[in-house]
Image (tube, rainbow, N blue to C red):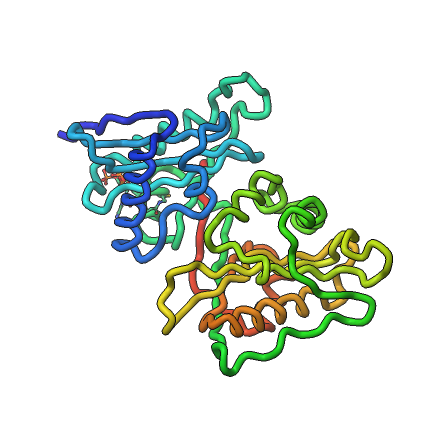
Length: 321
Ligand SMILES: CC(C)(COP(=O)(O)OP(=O)(O)OC[C@H]1O[C@@H](n2cnc3c(N)ncnc32)[C@H](O)[C@@H]1OP(=O)(O)O)[C@@H](O)C(=O)NCCC(=O)NCCS
């Protein structure tokens, strides 16, 4: 007989947050892919009303599973992980059921926007256990996020960062001064994207406070017209990210966010800003460039394939049909 693990729903204190990070690290070591992505990890300390944390633990208190539900979008998004030593004991099923109930619950403030949302669960890496688990739970794939990669020459063989075309200027991001203008162009460029287009000032500031944040790797293409040139909204941006603490022999550098204002698309800015990102990452010592792109974003996929990227992994979102 299986005995259900006790579960706790609510904010996580510092020890519980660390236990979830340890659980995620154990799953990553076992599965070869991180089960929780950046935003849920940033959310671990959050007690926002649209975030729910659910922890399953043994009677002795050690954490065996975790699911985070984020009801801030049009659909509720969940990331779920069970410790490798505690799988096939029904914990995943219990946490999934709890997450589905949570997605349909009224928020604490009764805000109507959070009622009755469909739950979508991420499976990072699209691994066989997750596929089987989703199938057994009656879930179907509804969204694909592709992880693309291409080798880089490294600092020695790196090209110069390309120059801006006539009428434009390439400069790096100024934290604070450029926040509002960047949020505007990001929202326009990612108007149909479920997460990126909703990035708020708080989200931007949380990233600026991360150890990897480097404004020297965050490029803006701005119209080169005086006066007030620095206050004009960028027409395109390239935000790169290099995680600290990677071994120098093989380092990944990420094209973290690339966007072109919709009014300025089709002019080659996407290709230019991709080259800017690749040159910067190579010059900073990265040996592989990586990025995430929606599986149905045909124009972006074409840009990246032309730039030499190939599919390295797939992340799938599952939902009840
Ligand atoms: C996917 C995951 C959450 C499953 O957690 P779990 O606690 O092992 O799942 P459960 O024990 O509740 O399994 C429920 C059912 O799913 C199916 N299932 C789960 N893992 C399976 C596997 N490895 N192979 C075949 N079927 C599997 C079975 O039908 C199982 O029922 P059964 O054990 O009675 O046969 C876990 O493997 C995990 O943490 N993976 C890494 C993170 C991840 O991929 N999360 C996304 C989930 S969509």
